[in-house]
Length: 276
Ligand SMILES: C[S@@+](CC[C@H](N)C(=O)[O-])C[C@H]1O[C@@H](n2cnc3c(N)ncnc32)[C@H](O)[C@@H]1O
Image (cartoon, rainbow, N blue to C red; front, side, top):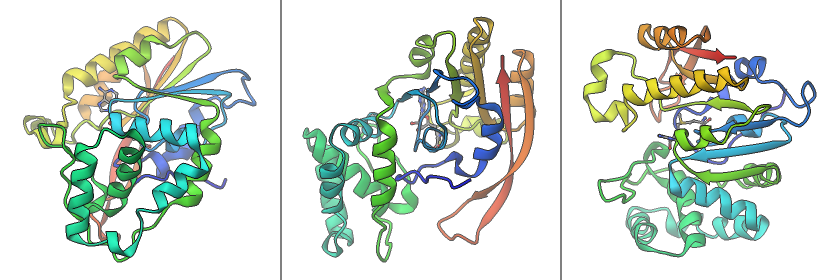
């Protein structure tokens, strides 16, 4: 199967585990008319590589959702506009911080969306990090020639015709699920150790309370006949959480890039929990 790559660098991208997810997601050919809901859409790897008739794609990152909405609305002219920022003169530290400042202060949605992509490809490790006043604060990435993802954006634009993008928390998105929908959840990972939750760095505002809430929502939807699949790290806690909520779970190993040096990788255990 040829996979379509997302145009954004996004942590936890599901690109490498699509095969596993596919085994559980019912495709269009098997059940026509179904809609896939992704409450944590991120870079959209699952959306891009499935073929449901309709998609409801949500995330709490407003910049991400604005970018998707602008691309869906405008297509090629917006892709060209984004490209205009990928020039040698913009690939140095001082220009990066100037454009980052513009991103943090502008109210022009089109400009902000284009700069979000510029930042994603020029910042350190593609990290999307904000300070307490919601200002993007990832430092400059020092890449020789950042790649402009033209064909990936075109593929996303084509796919976006069947999608609706909303800025919402997973609780509100899951309330919109109806019988016949399938819900795929890829929440921020639960940490590999229990103690990691004591540091904000690992929880990213999505603590154990949210993981439990998500599992409860999934089990409620399953009771209404709506299938929900959740991906997460496999830990004693996550396995217990989903099992107690009535899901079946599957464990497997995933190769994960842990630094900007592509040769530094390790393997982590992931799980898929299926509520139905
Ligand atoms: C692990 S990423 C998703 C990765 C994605 N499936 C992919 O393939 O790239 C988790 C996403 O959840 C979003 N998020 C964090 N808290 C959330 C919440 N309470 N409700 C909805 N989305 C949330 C983040 O902005 C992030 O994009």
